[in-house]
Length: 540
View (cartoon, rainbow, N blue to C red):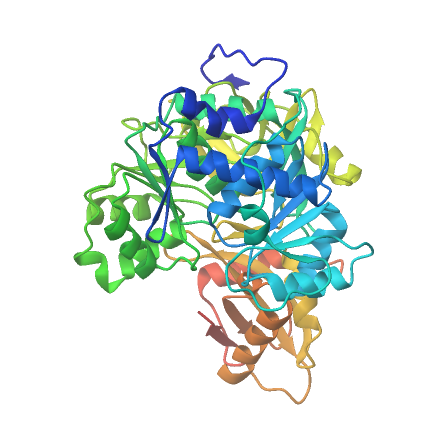
């Protein structure tokens, strides 16, 4: 077992993360300092505190009480921030979901989270409304935005309600151990699982990170991933605001061109990034002319950051890169680089306030240098998945330890090296994808006789979903067939889960037990072999 540096912190018994992250800035004399940029608008800390209080009164007016859950399904915006802080301030528990999911996924969230209120905007309103129509109980849907079309039953114009709400919020005393928010983790069924975290976890996570990477009131933080990622929400919203820094909000999808434009507009000093976007930025026609001189640090998380990609990005843009590795279950970044102590290709060293050990499948620690499963323990770790005792038992393994299912080895200098996943989950662009869900979708297409989905690395070591498909009689391998299968997946499951690569085989290899031999397929892919009856197609 190895421990990160110890830090002395004290958290009062009665404590609210809303005060810690947001409202303490007023006492620090930052009331008029810019806290957030959104488009051409600027919001001071005083503005955000006032909006948070109005939002809290709106949530109370629609029935949200102590311990009730609120579900955010809207684009990044000041309303997103205010709803996050307001729900916690009134003693509620805040949850969130991606803004580009199918209706069936939103229906799952409603049934799983059972929220007392949902916040949407015009991007998500139609799908959430349809999902809510299948939900067993009526739930108020607060629709953000101006000039809204006619609202339907149980829908409310959020802007009008905020304008009519008081900026003074009567908030209850909250215990530091009370649940404040959920993180979501992917599962073997492909459905996200909620990990409840308490108010004190937020302090522990912040203090651990601050002692490695420090934000200042002069910083401006721009995020590539959206706020529904807990990595983006904490490192790109909560923790910068706690330090008095400003955060940049934008509603559109992130592309290299959008990120370059935002860097030019806001001149951020911190860029919260993911490896997939880092490679896209490098491949963009703007890479040679983009000015990133304002960026003092680029943070990377969500997927493997290879040594080559790290070095290419640093060399091209002249920006220091720090890798961060955490999970929904552990909440904080349990492994990370420190500025000035970066070993490209590694995941860094143990964070403060964290204990880790690398074990075999029986839970026994492996010798230094050998690969095993990473287990993490800290006072910020969750204790289980909501309503999933079976999965909880395999992940939260007792005595405070979390089984991450990540394969790691640690070298003699204390650097940790990610070696893959101990489960079949594939992490694509920072989001876990369950192969089983993609396989079940493909099997519904009339052309597919059998299939299997695996994760294969590209030239940068980033995992992509690849489907090996055996077709039914009457269907021929072709670029058209591959494209149709890809579009079929995009239409029936979340678009990011669709396979990026499709290879047709006459027969899928089997093990002695008659199961599809994934290992043989992975070896085949690695060797780049194919026979005349095979057809490989890159969909993206």
